[in-house]
Amino acid sequence: MKVVEPAYDILDDYFKEGRILEQIERCGRVCYKSEDKISAESAVPFIKGIIKRGHESVLEMANIVLEVSVDGESIMHKFFERIPRFCQADKLERRRYLLSGNPRSFRDLARGHKDLKLVKAMMRVLTEVYPVLFEDLAPARGWIPQDGVSVRVLGPEEVDGLPVEYLIKHRNLLVHFTINRAVSHELVRHRVASYLQESQRYCRYGESKFGGEVAFVKPCFFEHGSHEYDLWQKAMEESEKIYLELLKTSSPQAARTVLPNSCKTEIMVHATLAEWSHILKLRASKAADPSMREIMLMLLPEMASRFPAIFSPIRELLSKD
Ligand SMILES: Cc1cc2nc3c(=O)[nH]c(=O)nc-3n(C[C@H](O)[C@H](O)[C@H](O)COP(=O)(O)OP(=O)(O)OC[C@H]3O[C@@H](n4cnc5c(N)ncnc54)[C@H](O)[C@@H]3O)c2cc1C
Image (cartoon, rainbow, N blue to C red; front, top):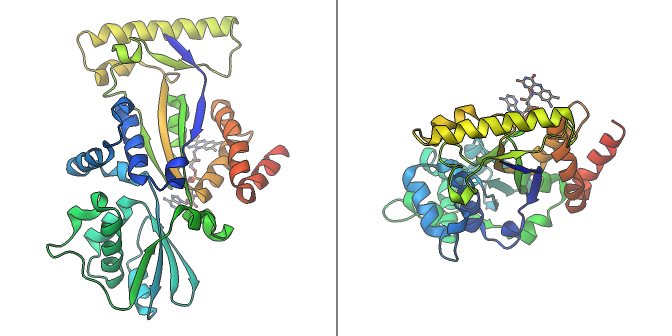
């Protein structure tokens, strides 16, 4: 058995470099632990395969921010009447709006609301900029240009230059966590976020790529060398032994039923800065599970250094906790 420390990695370079296809692939491959298959050309075929299989939650792992200008407000009113789910919208000034969402949310708009002028105009631009993400949804003759609406994709620097009130709603951040299965289960209770997680159904930890062993996260509760730690280690060794024995005759999804909460998992979390702020307030506080608090207290200072206006007040608040 292998014992690992909990860890996090903020994966923001993809966003800053405008490499959203690569970001989506990187996240999707966490499920199957097939990151070794990533190459300079692998993102497009990977995404095509994802779309073909209908595994569209993978398409939630990137965010696109649009600036929309309209000749008349009725174009926007008709859009808002549909109460678009999973999109963020703000009115910047008269007839000028910010609209953001992940590729899946725009795909759902294209499927469910393609009668709307705004949706047609957005899809035309999105399909032009990111063909692999949207081209399968285009009508036979393509999306027709719409009078009275103009749509523009904002670049990363423009998004980061938004005033805080907009930044917090339209800027997403992707974090890769290595945590135990109990903590990941708590994390996914936060509903206004997107997740992709290492699959115990597909990963066969007996294989050489996993070192032929199961990885567990060091519990924050027990001192290494203490009686309690020894008991914990004994339990992990026993569960690993039975898991590996079961794998000889059973699938990983069957064998995993004996794996405990301490089992290591990797999970990608993609959320707006507003949702991160909510998560950190709840999960870095003294009321939180100590294992959850441990990783969130590691993450918070880096969040505060990247986005001080949003996360420094949370650090201050929690220091009085
Ligand atoms: C200390 C602690 C103890 C906990 N104990 C338990 C427990 O014993 N049992 C248990 O089941 N859970 C427990 N939880 C989990 C908790 O109940 C929430 O499910 C979890 O924290 C997600 O947070 P949230 O609901 O505030 O918001 P999120 O899911 O992060 O959503 C963010 C915000 O979006 C809005 N929102 C999202 N979805 C909806 C919706 N469907 N309807 C209306 N508004 C919505 C709300 O304004 C919400 O604040 C605990 C959490 C903490 C921090």
